Image (cartoon, rainbow, N blue to C red; front, side):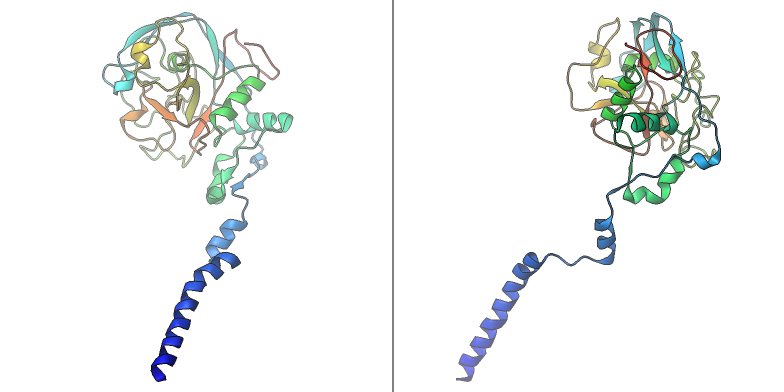
Length: 298
């Protein structure tokens, strides 16, 4: 009799243990306080632009790049930077500065486009990149393309970006061929900027055409799909984006960049829907020099 009772108790315990996961699934999982706070957040935070500083918004300005040849790529870089070739581009214009928070907010207000909201984990540090004249960040390739279209412009092609930042003589940095660790807003030295700086702050990071912040500050989306061998396979006159791809091209360095990948010829790639606090953009136009608001066909 005792053995039978023991078996019944043992069977009951087994059934209870087996039922516990099912009950938990039906009732829902109990969250820890940390998980609860995370789940109750919206997932993204949208801190307002820091207008309290009283800083005057910098005006939109474009630089005209004349038609002509330039040296693209380098034989001393990565596989996707080779071979070094002379490429001819028609005239175009490009923004002197990276698109700022103030400028992008005008687009958001006018169109209802989504804000460049940072993930909730960046809530504390997000305010550090929201200055009126800091480059807008946490925008996808699509966001950047839509902004440029709204401005009557477009994203620069990869070749246009490189010429605008490098000039025509094949230099590896905007200031020349000698490496300068403090030449741009990088993470290589203590330069007083924990994150992105006001556009145009680093006067050494200025191309022969007067285009600012190509080497540092924030990494920039350009129009092209990424193709590892495109520097070898593309036409020598006005190369456009490959017809298709998986990744979009990113060019230039950012405030977290270290190492040798900061030269102007360096190429990066990322999924077009990716957003990050180190990535921004600037626009270009196939037609003449332009400044101020409004729209222009390109």
